[in-house]
Length: 234
Image (tube, rainbow, N blue to C red; front, side):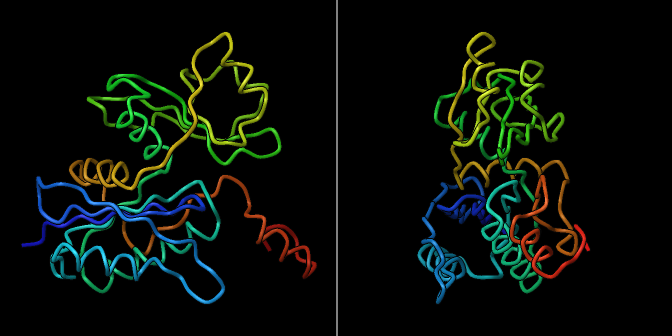
């Protein structure tokens, strides 16, 4: 019987994975070393964690993958790996917006109450940030809306605010009068728990349609297009 759940959280430079080997059992985590020019360590870590807990490919019920926004390379590696495993093993797949991972991590660490609403601001750059308005039910986050916001819109978002290290100053100033500001954290166990909730609600992702969430054109793509004289998106 398939009952193991794997989660991949590689949306930031420091990545990690989590595994629930048995239904209703505990969650085990492992850090993933940063990839270098010679090696990508994600598959080796997945193999090691599964072997450690006696999980075989046929035991996997589903994979939850943090799909962004976040680091360009990390998201591509995570999504490609999740697709490959789902394709080979036939297990389920669920894309978890990284903002939900951050919100659930905040509940797990005690930053947020289990019934609080909040805004998670990620992928901050050039005065804009990707804001996800989140409601919480029994500690489990649900996205109400998401999109790029400018500093002029900072006063209109829901507080408290959970932001990344590059949060534009206008958003930081808005928290002085409007509410608390928390630093975003990412947990693979949180990704797994949100993934389980999404799967329970029937929100599976077709592997063919799994793709990283990028709020704006990736810098690597923009540089390549500029170097080759192509128009944006061309």
